[in-house]
Length: 182
Ligand SMILES: CC(C)(COP(=O)(O)OP(=O)(O)OC[C@H]1O[C@@H](n2cnc3c(N)ncnc32)[C@H](O)[C@@H]1OP(=O)(O)O)[C@@H](O)C(=O)NCCC(=O)NCCS
Image 1 (cartoon, protein in one colour):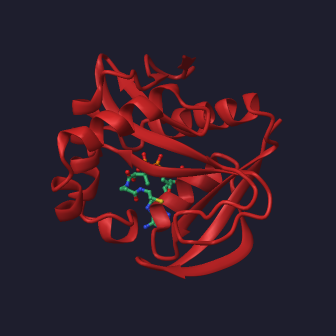
Image 2: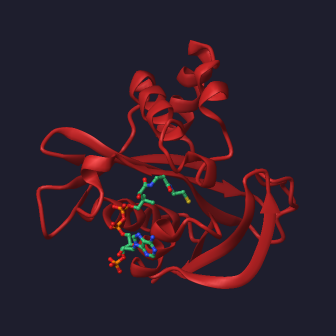
């Protein structure tokens, strides 16, 4: 668990039995006004998944060494989430690209409007980075839409910088950002 110095904010990994929370966060995220420049999945598609999908996703996110979902909790309320996907060399990523070197990507980043500007995103990214470092990786990546300036601002503040790589995926033009881990 990671504590933010400025507030009572804490970050923890999702627990294996919290599938309803994982689902409600995803449904809230995909209903956000900025969802079209933030998430590959639509709200309609997320709403259609059966319970088993969420149960399996949550167990993986809680226990796996290749995926982890983190929650930001403020005064007992979950205010945000971010996940990390680790892909082995030669695997395909979420856009079908072959991974050259084992790498970790932050995905599914969402902070509830009430938690924005509170440091929740910084705490989530710090927890994600710390987890990735425990796996022996020295860098953490993410893709962000060219027009998602708020997300880019938050990532920059957290130490991410554009790698120069760009791509056009299902949500349009994106840029890749990365951060070296201590
Ligand atoms: C992206 C998200 C997680 C960021 O968290 P947040 O708490 O809103 O971020 P913060 O307010 O702490 O930081 C945003 C930064 O961008 C800046 N910013 C905000 N709007 C901006 C804009 N339109 N243009 C440029 N910069 C902007 C802010 O000033 C701040 O930077 P600063 O601290 O250097 O001043 C949150 O807004 C969110 O969940 N958005 C919807 C989903 C989403 O976009 N997810 C990311 C997918 S990649």
